[in-house]
Each structure stands twice: as structure tokens, then as C-alpha cells.
View 1 (cartoon, one colour):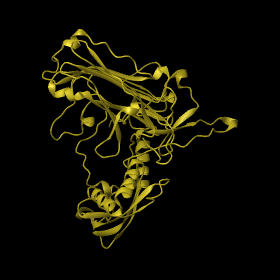
View 2 (cartoon, rainbow, N blue to C red; view 1 turned 45 degrees about the horizontal axis):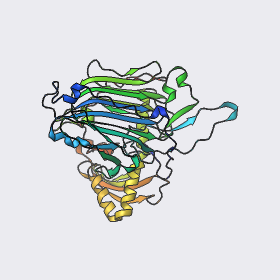
View 3 (tube, helix red, strand yellow; view 1 turned 120 degrees about the vertical axis):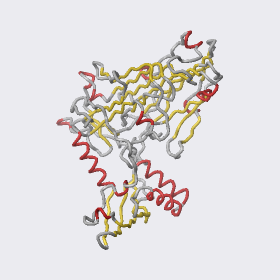
Length: 438
């Protein structure tokens, strides 16, 4: 999500409409209660019986439901459930009215974007709230041990990078043979619209999965799509396209119902791959990623991205000859990145911040070059972007010494991307239809 640090939207505290309340739990079958192994996954320590994930951008609700059968002592730790605030990539962070003719345009409140430096977005607790949690443990004899807890009493923790907040709870009386079952609902505010990322594969074999996404009204069909409002992304551009990028097993496909609601149903899903030196699991496994975009085709998209990057990183350099250079670069830091460095400055002082920032820069610049933080601009003014002024020096590789220019992605030179991305297909709902292949 993209948020402006000091302009956090107020989360609606009103009671949740009945349409948003979680559905009831599934009654376990006698086979599920008595099972001691999964024939389709020999030796498995646990098995997902059901996974359901629902995102509704008309109600601003994200709901997760899971049932897991514990088959060995090793997986009793599945009694501990972590609720992440990650609901998707919030590519649309504001909604505005269409032009209303002679009456002019209605006023809109401030948007609340938080952006990572790479342009993607992250969830932020100021626009998210866990509004419902329901869980229970069922022993193999059918005995039920319910968990009753209010969301505000859940244990609050942080991720390893100290930034994103998580909530967690522990299911009662979990033993080998138990079925653990839980559902939680997260509500996000009226100015944010999720772009779900369906991660299809899990650590264990999954018997049945159901995913459902109701997009913003403009992308629904017939009268359901009637609206005088439109979405705006973090750059202030009007969102005109909804696309999705599926990586799925043969025969599986995202379906659209007559209203334009998107869904996916799968069964007998193998566990996520796990091996040495493999790419991140969310890249290597089955998944579907959705995006709200302010672009009508692939060329427009990449043109916009290049323009954005050119605004975020600029610099002035001087060559003493065709080989050696010195100069200054300016990094524009926004959202969670800016918040992180500002908080670090308050907690540890300028020297420690410089040490950590320099360490981060060293991991980015190419061999033969160096970069160090000179100072921050706007460190004590959260109303504006945080700007890091960086001094750099080094020598150009021999291959480009006759054309003394720095590459556009100078600070990306040491990053690695050994695996080629080949999206299968992306479709847009109303304004465009284009593929991400080629």
C-alpha cells in the first residue's frame, strides 16, 4: 500500500455489514477425522483440506479460511497462526468522482499512499484492521475446542525487518490427528483497492482451493459497473486497466462470472517446491497476480515506469578523464523506506544511520565504484519526501571508456536476477486487452 505518513486515513469503525461476515465452518467428514495419511502425498506431515481466499474491493474486505489436518507430531506447531497485514499490492490508493457537468467535481479527502522504493506497495496498519477471527481445533473423535478471541487481544509482533506488523494466535488442544480450522477477516479503508496475489501452493499438499476477487465497480459488468468514480494510482494517474498474470497448472484458468467477479478453483495441489538455490517460492510456485494500471498497453506501461525511475534518482557527475568520475546523486525515499530511515535516525543518531545506509549502498553499486551518504534532506519533515544525497566515485569499465556515461541503473548494477520472468497471459477488463507475453 502507499501511504503518506502524516495523512493516515481513518479506518471506518462502524459495524460490519452482514454480507461481510465470515461464513460458517465446514463440518468434517468421517474420512477427514479418521485419516492418518494422505495417499496422494505419501509421508506428508500435514495436509491442507481447504484453502479459501476472498478479496472484495467494493466492500474493502479480505478474508482467509484454512483447514489443516495434522498427521505427525512434527507439525503440531501449526497450532500457531500468524496473520500478516499483506493483503496484496495496493496499486490504487485513491478514488475520485468523474466530472459532474455543470455542478463541477466533488471534493475528495487526502489519499494515504505508502510506497516501497522499487515502486511496489506494502500494507500499513493505519489503513488495515483485523475485524474478525474465528478458529477451532477438532480431535479425531469429533470433540471440538473453539477459540474465542477479540482481534484487539491478539498478540502483536513484527517481521524480521522490523517494519510490518503481524498478529498471531494459538489454537487450543492441538494433537496428532487434529484438524485445525480458522478464518480471519481484514478490512481496508475506502481509499485503498487491493491487487491480490494468489499464492496457490503451500508447504503441504492441498485437497481443495478457492480464490475469489471482486474488483472495483468500474471493472464489473452491466449495471454492477455503474459508478461516477474512478481509481487513481500513487503517481496521481487515472487507473484504466485491470490485468492478471497467471502461472497455473495445465487446464487451470481464472474465470469471470456474468458480473465480472474473478475466481479460481483447484484441487489436489502439490506442495510448494523446496530445494537448494531455488528462486523465491512466490516466483517458482503457482500463483496469480492482479494489477490496477494506468496504462492501456505494454509500451505505455514501461514508458511510465522509466519516467518514474528518472524522477526518483538523479545526479551530477564529473569525469576527470574518460575513466574516473566523481559526483553526487539524489535518492527520493518515500513511504515505508522514508519512515524506516527517519525512525532509525531518531533512535540511533546520524552516525549509525550513515553506517547502515552506506552498507546498503555498497550492495548496489558496481565493482570499481563506491558510494556514501553525505546527508539527508527533509529528515525532520514528514510532509515531504526524504531525499538522500549520496556522493559517488569510481572508474568505468574498459568496455565503455570510449563512451563515458553511467548506466541508468547505476545503483542496481550489483543486483542479481538469474531467473527469467515469462508471464503467460494478462487480460484487461474494459479499456484494454493485452498480453504480458513476448
